[in-house]
Image (cartoon, rainbow, N blue to C red; front, side, top):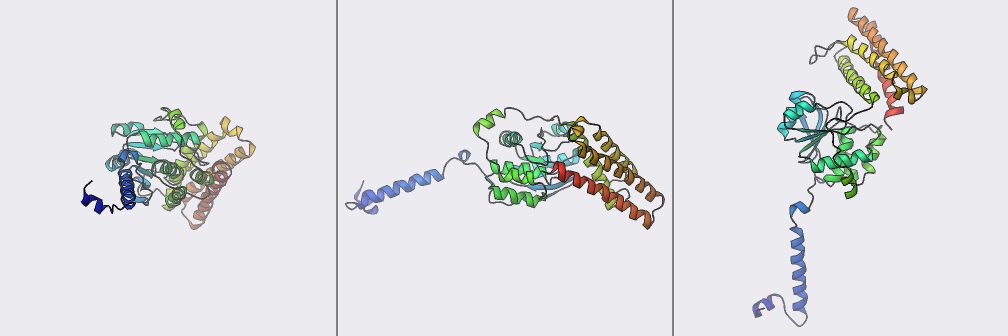
Length: 330
């Protein structure tokens, strides 16, 4: 060490070694700050979810450069829009069968990991995290409307892969519009812990394009689709919506009643007990009443028939909400 260097370090009897030690510690800290990027997980902890407007897809958000969330991307146009965003993998947590073929033609990998409205089971949470970590990204996570189950699944992934705190995960669900009635979904975010290496290893390759769902779940998916159409009918003044002119309101109500009838015959329903079966029978009759009210209003669109139609529509909605609160949401 030259005299000039010693002076620069303040090399007195004790100060030289002391200051040299400080310098070495500082250099070591700088080296740690420059740890290779692959050893420091990138995260979006400081970035708020960005709302996106995508034709044909509801409630779409960019949560990070790698993670997106939203509604079901049905059809070529919606899936093409996701491809244009750069999406490489789609994860569905909905019970409906994914449109695997169309996605595959566009070069997108589909993963089907359905969950219920009562929460994200630990096994599925681990599979979700494994899918986001190991499959090509960006990844798009969705349920039916992109408001409840999808945001809960994305919240779990955000904690595990984006550096989110649990409060950030809960805040994201609130931003997405997840109803506070779904206490199990919120609990999944509040209580989630990152999977261990053993859990990730045990998840194996259980990332199917299509998962088998219980018959009751499949039937209720169809019920939800019919009810969505009927809600569009109601908003259009109980006529076919302008953007869906092929909808026949009376036929939709008929099919809704039939689906409730089919559901009541399932062994899963009988296993749930008499109260559940009774509720299904009641809403089936209400759907049939709605069908008759729609037929009557189509023939004589008077204020009186409209009043009865509104009452029939509300009755079906209340029955569904009550049954969900008792058997689905928690």
